[in-house]
Amino acid sequence: MTAKAKAEITRKMRLYDLRHQAASEMLAAGANLKGVSEILGHASPDMTRRVYQHTSIALRRDAISRLGNPLSAVAKIQ
Image (cartoon, rainbow, N blue to C red; front, side):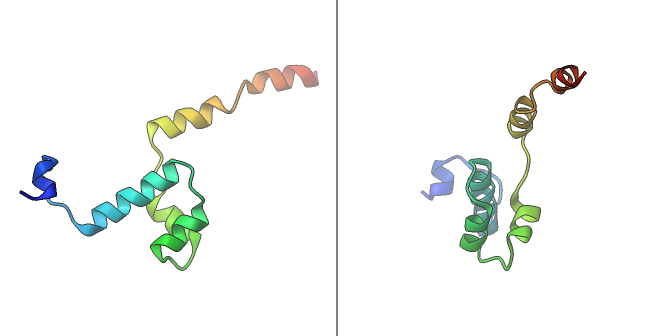
């Protein structure tokens, strides 16, 4: 039995799918963009960012939670 069958993965998988998932997971976990780019052998970190760095709902919520309350800053100025 193959590893794919043991994991009960039924859809077709390519090596690229594993590479894409690994790169996306590294970036989502906060890995350095340049480091991931070098691991993948890309010419520039910008290519890695455009192709692999996806935003998830969890990442969006985290970004919003870091914003704080912008209205409180306005109130302090006045």
